[in-house]
Length: 127
Image (cartoon, rainbow, N blue to C red; front, side):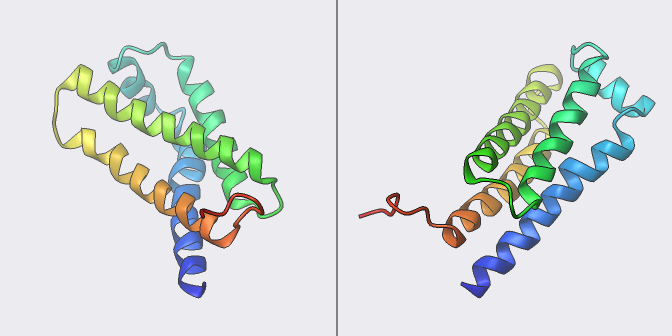
């Protein structure tokens, strides 16, 4: 159980820093705006993306948030990361930059799995 706690807090802390703090600080820089427009999205999408990333990461790191809301945050961040990989692949072709969001996604999966190991919901145990 102690190992699961360590995996949860390290992976969730990384996700919070990468998906919450970093976008909040750099989301409206010229580089971020150029990256979004390069992928074909409108510039206002940066604001929506930053708000959703910060909200999702904050939900994951806050212990008293209910289980169902955390599930939605995990789902939203998963969709965002997988769509980032797909968008990069479609626009720039298959290259190293496609793997970066997938790497972050694997850390998110580690957080999700360890969260469920620590918080088994009564009636949802596997038989």
